[in-house]
Length: 335
Image 1 (cartoon, rainbow, N blue to C red):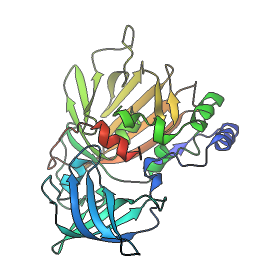
Image 2 (image 1 turned 135 degrees about the horizontal axis):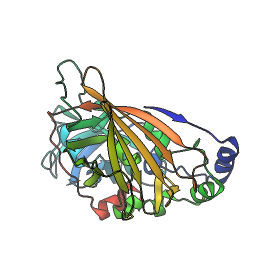
Image 3 (image 1 turned 90 degrees about the vertical axis):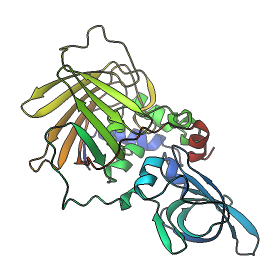
């Protein structure tokens, strides 16, 4: 994704000064510059959301037995990588490659791959086949759309250059991902972060409304095509959306968001003044759509943030809503 940020230099400097030393990213607990190889025996395998876990008993450098907690991805992504709830069983001998915890006293790692009986199972969504050679063409915006892993993830997960107001910088500076992350309680992201999060989305188009569904956290957004204002709308987690067509471009205008601890980006609050404009447009070859957004929230953002990404049309993929498990979510954040 190419994320274009309108910066306020003073606000950005203030934000950086107030940042704590720890990174605001759940996977920051892992050293993704290092890969370790773990050979051992499976002691437990948990097919849970938001993340799958594989436990492997191995030996440390002293020859003592240790059990590694290996974190995978959400079940829908793992399933598309060839995994299932029955892929591993207690007693299986495996060879895993993973990024270890930055804390050497914690036997935790983020999975890259696992080999069992000569078969390798990838652990990262970046390895899902997204080749375009024989991909079908979309008739319109309806259908299944796949968001790939791209560089935009860091922009929302570690918004170091975002233009923040003093209130925005204060909240970001006080944020602790291990205790304040809303996902610990399975609270969904809000748009636009929700829309650009890696995974599968489903769009359903009707005359009076358009539904945008997200697998992760089982979120459904309704765009009211028969309304021209937000007058009288209720304040909700995903806000109130109205839409219209500008030629072949769907324009979605959303306000009336509830306050959210990380409603604009990780650690960046959102409030009642949050205003989001999104545009959805099929590309000329009709195998992708371009998603563009403009995010404004004067209470916490010193200037609007705009960005865009490509989503691939993938009618071959099943849409499987993911129900978040709070206990597994707390483990994901290291709690």
